[in-house]
Image (cartoon, rainbow, N blue to C red; front, top):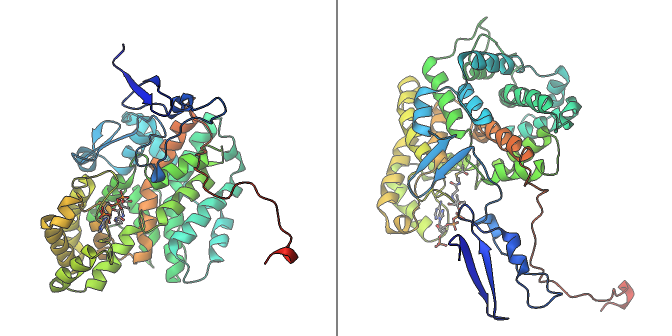
Length: 429
Ligand code: ACO
């Protein structure tokens, strides 16, 4: 008997089955042969929240949640965050290898030359109320790009996919910055092609009357590293959404808008916004103990803590903590940091958190940096979405080239009424 199999005995029938094991998984469709009778549909697996279901084979990002390891295309996140730039990382994530010098120049040129928005996109954005949530503006505007680029529906054409990749990576900072300026009642700023990706983003956000905006190099680098840290994280909620929408062969703009919608939720990318609200609610270091008590009593969650995959310190949180020190050298120390450090100290020693393996995740410290850099809390998920757009695109491209992929369509366990006859309204009691 081959060792790479799973022997199953169905105690309902006494029948035995041999199911192949490949890459530490069994193919769920193999379960369907397990039936109690010929007209039985066959066995399925039940997995709400996909806690133990692999939906794809991927070569992009590796996470070892127990050890706290994160690799993009095999490279440790710590090395990338230290030595690379966001655009180089984007090339790596999308193409699978680090670029040569000429490949990198070409890549940078194309992305830089796709940062402009059609003037009608700007008019579309002007229609939002002054207090519209920037993530709502971001999501809607990315979806609206689908109407500006109908060629994007040629998803089977590699050249078209490449063009949409440049457009999406190039335009998301411009849309994000315009969403910010809209909420501040400020005119939108055109991209400056002389600046880096993060430097130009800062320019589009913060340029006022000066002729040429000069980004602070420390803040520029900090933002670039934050984009790197958010660039991909395998099959999380928003990336799975990207793949689900992409699996119906929708165009990448609506798929990215859907993925960004998933990111908006407070249990996912909206968590950094919630962390800031939580730290403000706590108010001071001496109130941390009382807040932890409420968390343990199940009254509130400790936002920015816990992760479906990491059962150890999130390696991104460690890097972000370091960036915070550099940013505070420029902006001054954010007083919320003391509350966050105290929360972390108590939580890491407390039996409740230790037992459940709850550690700070990427969102725990990022909000404190964003606040110090002058961003309003509503803007934090938008910043996350800029970096993550790269991962969404890479996963979408991988999906389209994977012959094993089908339209996503889970099964259900139906527990509702059996078939029954309709009763007209006048006869219902
Ligand atoms: N605070 C307090 N208790 C928590 C927290 C938390 N932040 N997270 C999990 N727990 C507890 C749960 O109540 C549960 O306890 P129980 O076993 O007594 O019922 C146990 O830890 C396991 O938690 P689950 O919710 O089953 O874990 P799951 O993997 O489903 O959820 C999630 C992961 C959603 C991230 C969760 O930890 C959470 O809600 N965290 C707060 C929100 C947050 O920071 N999200 C950002 C995640 S990172 C990202 O998306 C970029």
